[in-house]
Image 1 (cartoon, helix red, strand yellow):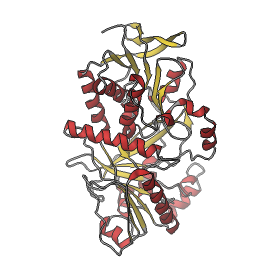
Image 2 (cartoon, rainbow, N blue to C red):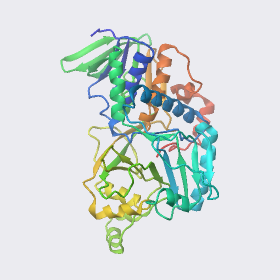
Image 3 (cartoon, rainbow, N blue to C red):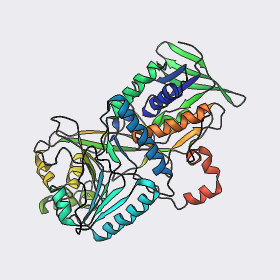
Image 4 (cartoon, rainbow, N blue to C red):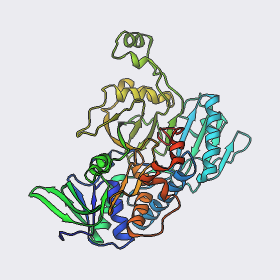
Length: 456
């Protein structure tokens, strides 16, 4: 192994592995080191929901174009690999029982389709042109259903209270682990070397990266290089500090729950489904009174925010449901192992989902052993990534990929590789630079930005 790699990538999560693939395979760059002291894709990438979508709000059409590019590349990889990572296109379905939310769904759909996500098709019961969900639907854009009878016909397991449904079509999920392993395998074939170690120091001389110090089992090795890529996921802020750069990012811990749907309440071909209404958890009068009397559990009787969602997980005879609900988050420093989620989390999510899928109430008392997992979302305040050169010559960042790292990985790596190799940059490239925070126009835009923009 050469002690002078041309490019050293810190972090072997989906961002780092994708960067290695695009540089080595698509651009033919040799002598790349991929450095991590953990096995690839085991810090946060394997904690993902593994979904993708081009369904993104503004401001502007930056994120729609960025995600369309990433999905183009994912579909290309699926084609050349024989769909090694099980990419599907079942879509995302958003449901509501509230007339005011139905109107907001309509307004959102008009706005996002106008940003380039595809055509909006409205079905109010006077036509029969809606094509139900499917694994290989070629449709993009979205279908807005305002006929409750059509919703029930399509998804009979959904609550009859559902008054409107938005089915975003260029969306679905994949196996993140198998995507990452395929990319790493191909990158290694192209000469990328995987190094088991931790970056502990970066030498900077005359404003340029000079050498990277790597802690391994046998000691510290200094690798001279002129190109250093920070792909450290939740640790990207600490790694950037090694070259004197302060990144405007923070971490949130998000969880997910897997249970076995052994009674087959939900069909296995269901799309990802989201309940867009706030929820009061269903309790018996006796349970509610008991919870209300306990100061530590009283919160379980109060309204929870909208957004509880699920999707089927697995293939063949699998019966797993993956359930998620971001109802309480706060910024925190990443630690390993992450702190445990509250013991009530699986029951809270299951009860919340029962408002959308009443049949799941059978699992309140008969739930299989839930598997609780989760990882960190490393984010900027406006929930857009940071991709490109840093203020130190030779240093680059592919990060702040929040909870959309899997779906954005290919466009992010594609953009990073263009920066590193001097290739043509897409016109959205400047929107992801660290220097955007020095732009007075962007600063003004941030004053009115929804910090949860694009997040489920």
